Length: 467
RNA sequence: GGCGGGGUAGCCAAGUGGUAAGGCAGGGCUCUGCAAAAGCCUCAUCCGUCGGUUCGAUUCCGACCCUCGCCUCCA
Image 1: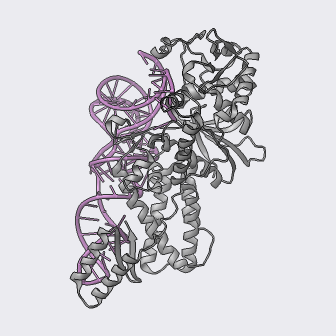
Image 2: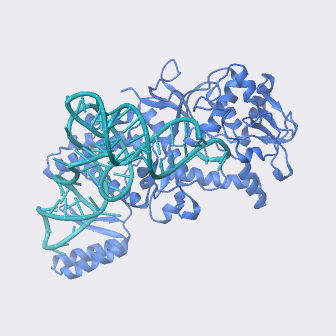
Image 3: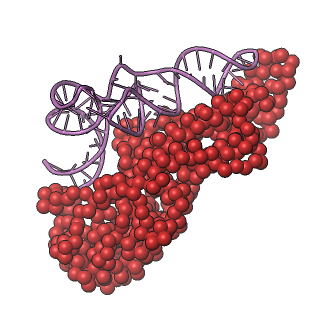
């Protein structure tokens, strides 16, 4: 089934078709983290969304090149480097590592290319030079180089592709107005920021003097380097549409004269407990905060993947508890299938895969995709309970699950190693049961629960599960 | 002020011009000595409010109310 995705450029759902004449290779760029702190749950929604897009493309048979930049030079970073009296590399390195670790915890496939802004200063300078030569960039009296929206539009280019902009009626932000920058026009944005003493050691030489890159230029420089002047997909959070993505388009198309990106995708934000995340409300979570509360990466991933990417999602702790229970239902079912299937292999059951693919192809309707999974779980459980599931059928069901999980990426909970103390208690309980000492058996069950283990009696014997 | 999303059961969340997927919680049942984060079943006469179009609207149109986002750093 053809994959359909919403394209912010056209504000409509379109069939996805790669630029590659062979219709095989897909270039995808996702705006990555600014490494000045640990990423929060809202950031993670976007990165899990990007992973969903990538996995869906791979599931659909495309050969994806996934690029995600690491922004490691920027105002907030410089400020903190100065405050903490550390070096840029040391400071950003710490958060970059944490970010990549967390990305893995959330089951995201690692991007193939992860360029750092500081590793592409030469490319950035070259791109700015091109813009200066083409007359759409200028150096102001303050030494900084700016992109001229007026000149850009003057050559017939379109500024405001991702959203309707009425530049004349746009409110000049107070911040911009009180800015010391000497731009020709308020809408113009910095490509190269001239050195100021507060920048400390963070500076590079350029044809315009010492300084550092502006915020948007790195993405243009690095995406063009990794994926070419025109590529298939660019994604990010919805807040990035303007000005960041709009400016990326302007810089890139201003420099190359070619269309920059064919298909733009934007993920909506999330609320936490119905409110905008903020540290003062106490609803500001990093992945680490949630792990400290006992939740796992796959549970967080599941929850983030239950809602459509273009809808605001309400992330709640209650929902996260529900995620735990919902996943254990799948784990239970898949575990039973594995027991039945043994070493048998079979082609994936097409029913689940078909329904799942159809849901996904419809602009990533993950809610419907999960519905197909849970319906399958119920049907499968019925067959297991009836003892009507043959070994080949179990193997086929298992293969189908693995196929859909190549997109969902929640895997199956790995069976925790049972410590000697726990299995000893389980055996003691068995002995008590045999001698009909149910009081003692129940006491042991409580003890196990207190130690974090649930014991279940099944027809095939006892089952220990870590809470 | 400009632009753009939303309002569907206790909570989260799909969807459709012909009468509401799925998950969690709740209720019932089965297995069990009793249980279970085991399994099955059940759970919205109704989709913000008021009008309109229609044989029929939650779905289309209009008005209104509420809410969120972008316009300034932000996923």
